[in-house]
Length: 202
Image 1 (tube, rainbow, N blue to C red):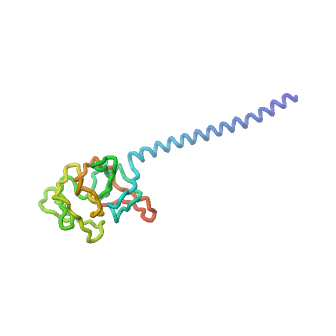
Image 2: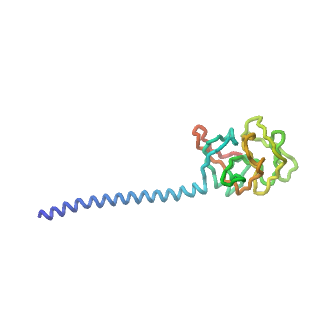
Image 3: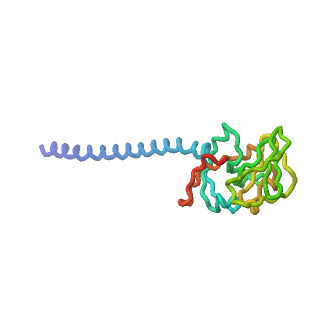
């Protein structure tokens, strides 16, 4: 009888231990499943839909400042073309490991002229240059010309920084090919007092 009681006590002790290990194993399995599902969702979003960038420099002041943290929309331009006025991030034509942030000014087939501090556009099929109204810039800002009129090639875009006196842009390296463009600015997430969603830039 004494041995039987000992066996019963031993069995009661082992069963909770087994259940405890099962609970831990199930918990670990749930964590692994959650991580895998999260990666399956986050990975394509991070690498194919949006991408974070930090502004480095003053070429887009006063609209974007150094160290602004931006989220770039990478998917829109797979279905539609960049539009005038949109702020885009693209590979530096002189160093594809670097990225620039500028504003789209001239579209494919247009001619861009910078004259008397203003930017003028000759649209396809027109002989006249029309001055571009840039409400996103400070009043009385002057755009310096560094060359002649620029004919924007097919599948390319003429871009300028908002800080026209301190920006290396299409005035220096010409129009950028469309396939150099990573995406357009969608959200400024930092600094917190300047959080902004850029839904209609043009």
